[in-house]
Amino acid sequence: MSDPDSAPVADAAGEWQRMHPLSPLLRGGVVLLAILGYAVSQIGDRLLGSWGLGWVTGGEPDEPGDPTAAALVGHPLVALGLVVLLLAIVGGVNWVAWRFTRFRVAPHQVELRSGVLFRQHRQVPFERVQAVELSRPLLARLLGLAQVVVQSAGGSDSQLTLSFLTLARADQLRDELLVRAGHSDEVGHDAGPASGTPEDVGAPVAPRAPAGGAGRPVLAVPNGRLFVATILHGSTIVLGIVAAVAALGAGFERFGAVTLVSLPALIPATFAIGMNRVRELLAHGNFRVADTGTGVRVQEGLTDLRATTIPIHRVQAVELVQPLWWRPFGWWRIRVNVAGSKSTGEGEGRGETVLLPVGTFPEAVAVLDVVAPQVTPDGWWAAANGDGPQPGWNPVSPRTRYLDLLSWRRNAWHLETAAVLLRDGRLTRRAVAVPLARIQSVAVRQGWLERRLRVATVHVVPAPGPVRPVLDHLEVADAETFLAQVGARAREARRSRRVATPALAVDPPPLVNLSHEPQHLHENERQ
Image (cartoon, one colour):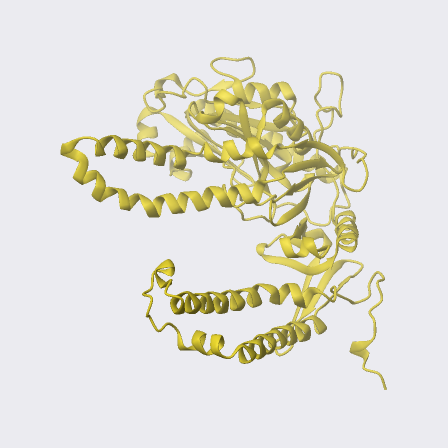
C-alpha cells in the first residue's frame, strides 16, 4: 500500500498543495552558512597563526588558537565528514518540515498546515486579506523561487507566509488571492462632473484597466537619486556637523585633547546611523510602482526583492512629506496607513507604508492619483506648497504664532468632496489626506496652555500607521466647525458607501466622537 503523504498533490483549486521541493534548501541555507562561516573563520585563524601571520586577525604568531580548529586542520577527512553530517542533519530536519507543510486556497479562505511535533493550522479569510506581498531573497532569486506573504487584518503577527514556490506559481497565486479578496469602493476625482468632484461620495470607482498582469507602470525611482536622498537624512547631517566641529576643534591646542578623547564616542553613533541608512537603501532600491486597476503594486529591494499589491480600498490615510534638505531638489516622500498594517518606522522598508521613498512633485502626484483618487492634483498642490490665506482653506489662529513661529501661516485644513486635507510644517512640509469614508473618529482636545489661549487641537483618526492627521492651535469655534463638518460628511460618506457596496463582507468600525456640543469641550475632550 502506498503512503498517501508520498502521493503528488494536485495543483487544483481547493486541493492541498506542497511547497517547491527546493524549499528545504532555502530554509536551511542560513543556518548552514552560519555554521560554515564559523568553521572557515576558525580554520583560517589557525592557518594564519601557524604561518606566523596571527597579527592579521589580532592574535599572536605562536597563539595556540581553538583546539577544535586545530583538529579540523590536522584531520581534513574528519572536517569533511562533519560538514557532510551537518548538511544531512540540517537538510533532513527541513525536509521533514517540508513534508508536513501544505497549503490550499479554499472557496472562502487560504489555509496553511505545518509542524511535526507541534502542528499548526492557520486560516486567513479572504475578506480579512489586507495585502499580498511577493518576496524574493537573493538565494531564492538565483533558484527562480519566491514566497507569498498574505497580510491579514491582525497585522504583522497574523501574516501567512507560503515559502517557497516557483515564480510563475507565486505570481498566479498572488493574483488569485487579490482577485478573491480585492475590491474597490473608493471615489475618484474624475468620477463625477467636469468640475472634478464626484456626484455621489460613496459611489465605487470603476477599476482602471491594468496593462498586463503586472499592471500599468507608473514610475521607477533611480537608484542614484535614492542614494543621495538616503544620505541627506537628519541623522547623517547632524553627525556630519558634529564630526566637522570635532575636526576643527582638534586644530586648536586648547580643545585638541578634549576632541581626541570625545572622537571615539562617535564611533557607535556612526555605525548605527550608517547601518540604518544602508538598510533603507537596500530596502527601497529598484523601487517601482504600478497601477493594477484595483490596487497599487510596489516592487522594491536590492538583495531581497519584494512585490506588494495593496488594494486601494485598504488605504486609510496618505501623507506627502518634504524634509528641508530635500527642498532644493524638489523631492517628496509618500507614506500611507493601510488597514491591518502596524508598520510605523520610516526605515523599515515595508511596501505597505512607503509608496514613494523619494520623487519629484509630478511623480508624487502620479502615485497619489492611483492611491488617493479622492483628491485632485490642484488640491495636492495647495496642500503641499500652499502658504497663507487661500480660498477654501481654514488657517489656524494668528494668536498662536508664538507657539508656531515658523509654520503658523501655513498650518490649515481644507474639506474636499470625498476627503479632508491637512497641511503643516515649515522646515519639514507635510500634507495629509484622509478619505471621508475611512475616518474612524474625530476629536477636539486641549492642553492647559491651549485652554488659556482659547485654542484647540483637532485629531482625525484613521487606521493605525505612520500617518497622524493632527492640526494644532485652531480657534475653539473653528475646531467645533471642523468637528461638525467633517463628522457629518464622514457619516454621509460611510452610509453612501454601504449602500453602493451592499456585498461588502466586513463593515468598517462605526464612527465615534464625531459630534460634540461646544460647552462639553473642556470636560470630555481634554488632553
